[in-house]
Image (cartoon, rainbow, N blue to C red):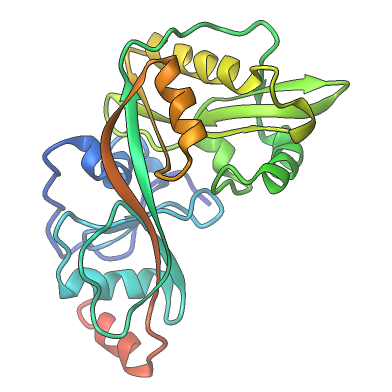
Length: 254
């Protein structure tokens, strides 16, 4: 796919920005540094489905926005809406919901790591294998294109990694932090978080990250490194109604 923004419909107005870019980070990223990934319909944007599952809504979506979500995703599709806590239209079902937290750099002690190597497209099979065994969150075949990913190999095998995901203006999210179970307890995740954060700081940006509210061990680790809680959030997936009439409604005005 071309890395230029693909506009599916443009006759609606632009989204009104949130009070802070991290309040709606997917929207801020897809209208900012990650605009070259954006697939758009009206005020609704998403990443290509092999890059990230995130779909970005305006801060206060209306009926037309939900129609555009349905047109982008297709009837019966499941879409992931990071941070959305509003009311769903009739006929839309929540398929997954998890309370989360957002933490931001508050004097993290960053440092490059001499053992960390830059990971790229050739490393994707190993990255996907590590993700399948550790389940740090969504990671897809082209997620590596979102930013810098660093890994540590032992005996040629990828045993730990961390990288960059959403990129609102001035900020970069650290994500996909994971370690092979056989190598936990060696501080590899800590080293990689510091190394990724160092690269973000070198660009003049600020690291942030998300995790589940119930993942107390990860929260303690992040806070010990110098991150602080900024806000609570929600990770939610919803299913578009599988309605024949829906597609007719959403295509009006294309």
